[in-house]
Image 1 (tube, protein in one colour):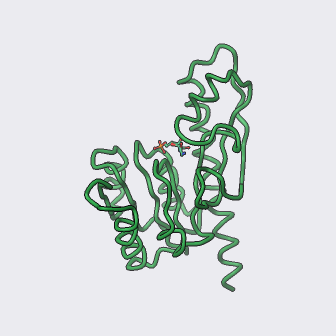
Image 2 (cartoon, rainbow, N blue to C red; image 1 turned 60 degrees about the vertical axis):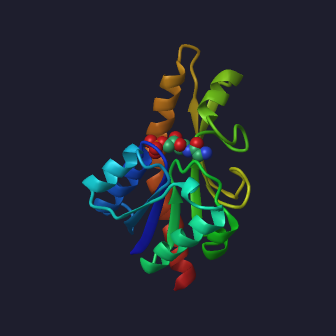
Length: 194
Ligand code: GAR
């Protein structure tokens, strides 16, 4: 079983779907840590309900990204974490984390990358009036939503859809696609070890 850490900054609906998939043994993983950079994020309540250990921090309490990432790495190593899953972690991963977990950090983004990278991808797609957007899961590199793509799924945007409708459709795809893709990545990791 692969030990994973989920990084999140917000509501944590993806965190919840990953935790439930692990609890129901749909993925060969245990969620052993939540890393959260927002003291009042709802994801913290979800972690508490599922008795998942939390490392929470405020970037402003540190002099640099390197300083807080060093502490995160120490916490990950203490718990033997093998895979990092970003789920609404609204921060660029820096070299300190990337070096330690090269090829073992994945991210979910609410658009069909390379379209609409960065913040508010759903709002960007909505404003651009595209008919199809979607969800991308990719390996993380030093860029903003630029790493190699692992999985994508399209979501159709109807003329009558509000931004909230699009968000709901995208999140419901995310909650299915992320656990399935995590399992795919885990199988690859396990094959490369054996
Ligand atoms: C998700 O839609 C995820 O794709 C997005 O944040 C949301 C988090 O929702 N991530 C990004 O935009 C990353 N660039 P959640 O907190 O309910 O899981």
